[in-house]
Length: 400
Ligand SMILES: Cc1cc2nc3c(=O)[nH]c(=O)nc-3n(C[C@H](O)[C@H](O)[C@H](O)COP(=O)(O)OP(=O)(O)OC[C@H]3O[C@@H](n4cnc5c(N)ncnc54)[C@H](O)[C@@H]3O)c2cc1C
Image 1 (cartoon, protein in one colour):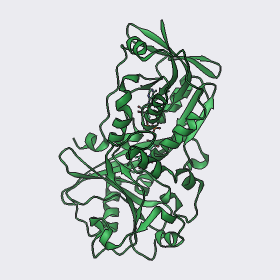
Image 2: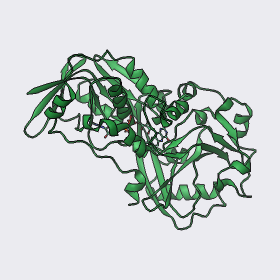
Image 3: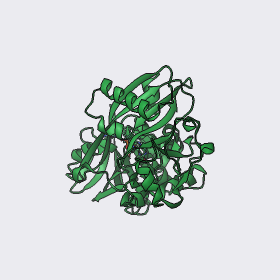
């Protein structure tokens, strides 16, 4: 069996693995990434693309640990979008340069007390009707409205920027195939890629699991018991319609979580699609699709009574967020990185926290090895392994 030597093998090609792979390659590490299906994975391509700065987590009025960890992320991503950050995301598409928050009415909403506390300093701007998005310039809108300094990105275009330059070192391979790992105690000595006619061992200084929900079975197939994972399910709703004005916003009620989070996307013919998450998606996990869609219709009618969506088509689906296990299924506070031997297991816990995850991983890495196999030899030895395709976004998948 042939062997190649790499500094790092990453398993899982969602935002976490691709961001890390890009940074490692730029920093001179020899790394390969193994993705079992498609680039951008599950959660990343299905996310709403909001680069949170923590505002929505602060609705109870206090700045939590989550707020602190995430607060710098919008600036960090903005630098990348401008081509001045650690990764060049100038070709990524900005869906909206602000995310917004609105309340149905001025008196009962959490927003009133929250923003009156001025806890968020320069992260928000109060909107006059002149600067409000068109969808909220209506006489029937009587609530508060704020612009958050948070970008919303088109994630498939981000995935393309991350993977494009290093696609030849990204392979389509399922890390839970039998005998993939040569384990010695707490270390993975080699990752073995097996084709029909050929097997290659990859010896690496570090093996990094960034497989989202797949981390659990990767850990088990390597024989590791920790870290434990939790799934937090969401029942997301998509509606294709004729209303021309986009919405990127959280609607705030009297609770500490947005009633609904709306982002706007487009099908291949340019028809708008709203993607609906927030509390609607969290509380709807027990409902079947028909009842969840009915809840979404009722809520939209209640909070946006002046909007006529025209002809609509509705879809819904369940998807899990995967994270390290917490007490009582609470939301983790920051990107999570666990080390054991030469194995690093990582969950960003929020797409926005991916730069933070990469920083945390780099703290655990040794310097690049001098003896790593050169790229030409690695390419030739792994030529039998295919490269994964890009994945369609949910709106392409459900409305093509
Ligand atoms: C509906 C939804 C909306 C969200 N919206 C936002 C948002 O607006 N803003 C935000 O900050 N966060 C958001 N999040 C959270 C965010 O999407 C995730 O935290 C983030 O995308 C996780 O990225 P990841 O790379 O760890 O996992 P994933 O994107 O799930 O990628 C994991 C990859 O690993 C691969 N894989 C799995 N098993 C194996 C294996 N055995 N071998 C090889 N590869 C494997 C998978 O195929 C997949 O490609 C949202 C999440 C969901 C579900």
